Amino acid sequence: MIARTSLQRLYAPGGGLPAAWAWWTAALASWLPPRWRALFGLARERLLLGRDADSLSLRLESAQALDDVAIREIGRLPLPAGDAFADDVLTPVLAPAIADLPRWLLLPASAGLRRRLSLPAAAAERLRDVVGFEIDRQTPFSADAVVFDARIIGRRADGQLDAELVAVPRAQFDTAVAGLGALAATLSGVDLADADGRPLGINLLASEARHRRADPWRGWNLALAAVALIALAAGLWQVLANRRQAADAFEQRVSAASSEARQVAAQRQRLLDAVEGAAFLDRARSGRPTAVEVLDELSRRLPDSTYLEKLSIEGDQLLLIGLSSEASALVGRLEGSPLWRSPALTGGVTPDPRTRRDRFTLTAQLAVKGEPANPSIDEKRRGRRRPD
View 1: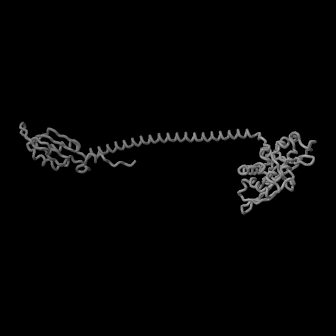
View 2: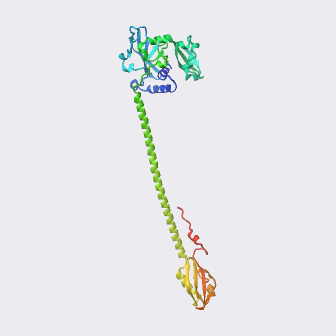
View 3: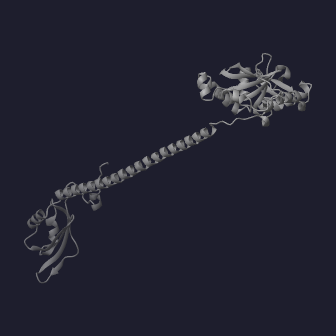
């Protein structure tokens, strides 16, 4: 638990989303070999500085796994005659990979005061502010006389937090930092050792005094991220454009097919109408008597004293106009013929003084086979259309 808390506070002091991101990247990095973690900048290492009476100890802290932190000593530097370093003496003597690591001052366990606290779960988001109000009650110092920080040790089943308040007298803290001389300006934090000499995972150094090293790959990473976003947006836009183009082409094909289908349907309807019309004419022609048959029937039924001036066949209507000396008997002579029915005189019979005969106008209805006695023209033209 100490190792995990140390990593989270070291790389995500703000908690919340940064802490979750740090934990997630640390979990992924734990699957990689140590050399690969160092190559990709995922080694999670820091340089611990410990000041003794006559030397400065240098120790390297590295994360072997998510819950395992290894600390090994890499060397000691003797203190200068003035008991403080005038400049940065670590960069010339350390390898570049180690010299560029975050530098932390590790205070001995005897330099600080630790108090265990029980807090509600809601205090986790603002843990340092909450424990700041407990300094006067938990320590013999006032809040202005110490530098302090807090960490979460564990969580109980009832929702309470087990936290620890770590406080160092400000005078002792300032003396320890000032003893580093020029190296104090390169510190990223100040931690306190436990009874075994391992860091607790806190940072007693004020935020404005922390040295933040610029990531040399930050600009390239931002540029690559921008290029990736632009490429992704361009790809999505191209996919959208392709889909729109395909939709437009499909719509044009559908429109063309619909137009052709309408034309075919119209042509088919015209063809059906023509076929039905021709069939109707054939049926009407085959069921109606011909003009020759009508003339033959009239010549046999009309008496010799009758001759016609006009014979007209319009549709099913037969019209006879002529002169006869037996005009009143013509209706009886024409009745009973299979070629027509309902013969009748139209108008009066008028005598013609020149021929001494009577002028008559006679009408009859032609008999059509297979049709009702008095079919209309609309009924003949109305046919049952076959289904499409």
